Length: 416
Figure 1 (spheres, rainbow, N blue to C red):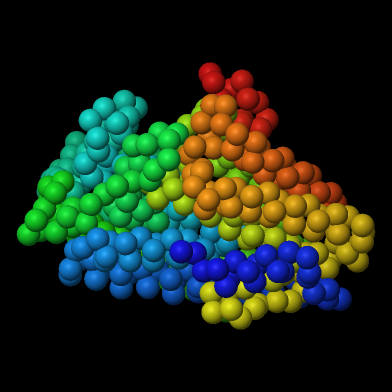
Figure 2 (tube, rainbow, N blue to C red; figure 1 turned 90 degrees about the vertical axis):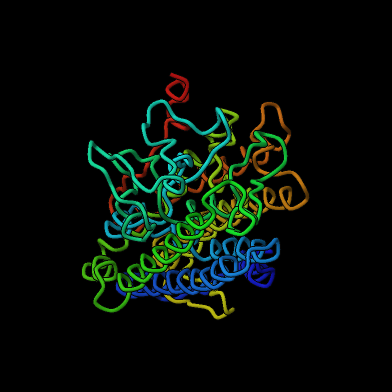
């Protein structure tokens, strides 16, 4: 279960934010410190996941598989909050696809149900790396006899096809849960522990499935180590936002505006609601989407308020975007904070419903009452984005280019 102590702290912080007399330089320094803390926590939880994966590999059982799943769920809590550092920061955008790319054609990785998972537009959608020791890529034969992090890096988004996701959280998620074949009914993936048991193997190639899971987890750790370095002193991410504080403030606003609007409200929420398609769930194999949306929203609020609660309960806090806006337009600053609080309540309502037995993929079903909860959160995300744009103007940072989404801007295009 996701840490209740962390959630209680986050909820308690919804109504309060320390106010600092802030300069842009202090704001971007604290922004970088929060980014570093978030990636450090992501790395720490990925290492815990690795230990659980090793236990599963050594002694496959229902208990060790469940422990590995729980570790994956815990690892998502800090990572999702770091997504607020995307879009405005080039080094994060260049890196992010290695760890959180989705959706994926899972048949690239492992077996899939008949007539479920093949993609006619992707020749690798049923390549099944786990079942094949040799692969043909672009006319060349690749030796996949041993599944290593280097092999997975080479296969990730192979031939420039974004659905060929071979690495990161969602590849690991698929390996742990398997396909979710429930559609818009209740139920996550149901991969058995015996899929990892060479002595009592189901699904075939259990030894290679273990190799893939271990290699993908090792690679996740390596990639997160790069993220920590990126935000440490002298790292490119920290340098990019702190060298020119005015530019750094604009980058921070761009990140939270784009995540709020085009990415979360649009691609991750509205698109699935329009299509009634559970394949558009962010954490679709584990049915963890309600949590991934919640912590994305919290990450946006973290950046605005300059406050992040770490996995150990300690707090990184300092000068914030809120402080800059407060100095320029107090009413706008508070309105934006209030809208973010309302967004968190709306996302919390989705979580409450999911934890009470109505999974997010059910909410996406045509005519399901839960769709109103999803739409309510979308509406608040859109409203807070409009205030983010006003806040940028208020502090004199000019205009930001917020990521768009056809699902919000041109619904007809979604169905073309």
